[in-house]
Image (cartoon, rainbow, N blue to C red; front, side):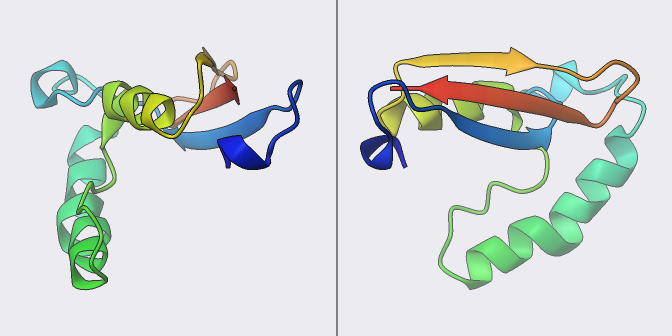
Length: 93
């Protein structure tokens, strides 16, 4: 995706607002449900399709690392007030 953008292009990605570290998600209000979805669907389907098996709560740290590896030099995050589920990544080359 980074290679397809013009110099001033922006890639917008939405994902679950969580940490990549389990211990930092203990108090997440949707944590039990997110880890359940992750184990029983997302991670399993990903592994079954040859993916990395990241699961639902792969987290911001992993997302930032993978965006950097994909060629994005600047990644900002944004939240929408009242939305406890999502974070939005605004990535630029």
